[in-house]
Amino acid sequence: MPTLINFPELEEQIRADRAERRIDWQDEVWDGTYLIMPPLDLQHQEIRGRLIAAIQSALGFSNPARIYLGVNVTDRSDDWTQNYRCPDGVVALPGGTARECDAYYLGGQTS
Image (cartoon, rainbow, N blue to C red; front, side, top):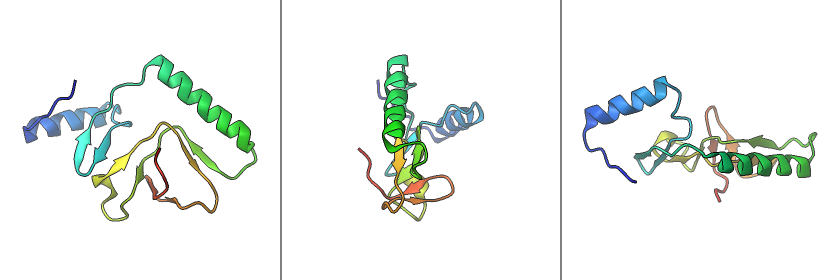
């Protein structure tokens, strides 16, 4: 059930608590709106893991592609924290359009 918190002090407290407990790793920001994503159920985690394993196997283990189970992806080089997603899986191919930055990938496609 979607919940909108329009009380800045409570929002700050909830976000700080999530960061302190390290349960904010899957949260996203869509055009400046912070979204708390639901925890992944077991079926979702199994499908995600198998999909990434199949991709890794198909590419080969010596392939220089970078494969992640969740990583920040954004379309903004300036203030990327105002719009990013954390998809279930990311495959960054050498020579692809996405650029690896400190804490995120810039560009690429999300689907």
